[in-house]
Amino acid sequence: MELWIPITIAAAFLQNLRSAAQKHLKAVMGTTGATFVRFGFGLPFALAFVAGLHLVAGYALPAPNARFLGWVVIGGLGQITATFLLIHLFSHRNFAVGTAYSRTEPAQAALFALIFFGERVTAGALVAIAISVFGVMLISVAHMHLTLRNLVASVFARNALIGLASGTFFGISAVSYRAASLSLGGPNFMMQAAVTLAWTITLQSAVMAIWMLWRERDEIGRIAKAWKPALFTGLTGATASFGWFMAMTLQQAAVVKALAQIEMLFTFAASVFFFKEKINRIETAGCILIVAGIVVLVLAG
Image (tube, rainbow, N blue to C red):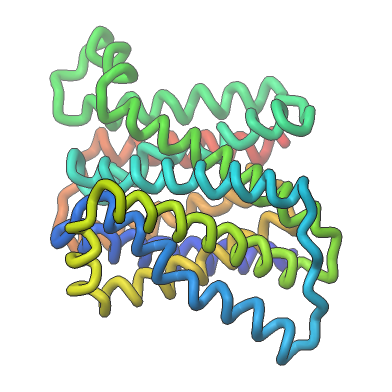
């Protein structure tokens, strides 16, 4: 088994825990605060990963370059936007289905890899994208009278567009992080991933903190009161991101994110057993189609 596979599965599990914690935080603070927690409270752990690899394992610190910094900025800002949209979506639909809207991310990442690096999109990849989008459309009409008109119109519904936009920005950030990590050129995938994460999460924390000081100062107080669950969110978020960055240094971003669809199983478990939410058959079918689309993407590659 290639190393990136167990790393990706572990990252998917941790990301599900982080998402569940963020949904809990959304009940006591706004979308901006719940988004900041992922980055600001994850920063100490990200720095600890770099320190551990350098001071304990003895790996050299790679020197950042202009290409690296450029991709970090694109990926970091893209992930902030994607996370904000996904958390905002939680207030419109339930936990599992809200997460499912962003499941076109791997297919979109394949498209951005074509745009940024000239990788060719095969006919199979286009089929995969179509399957995933159809799954999103099914989810968006799960509580409506299912007709062809409703099905077609659903893709332009507010919830669907927010979810698709979230997937778009997640796809951009995934491709950007891989490019940033590879641009360091060494010393190994772990240190490259850790340094990329540390620079990225520092940028994200600073941007979010400045925004809150400027426009949403009340959020700072809410975050301080919820520091314990916020710390757990930061730990799981930073560790999951470290896993994603390592896996995407070893393998193409679209392929990593395709395997990461195993998170949907964890999400369904959390939705049913933790949040006590009910998922109907159409919503389940939509989620399965999204996952199936990603599987087709992998097989076509």
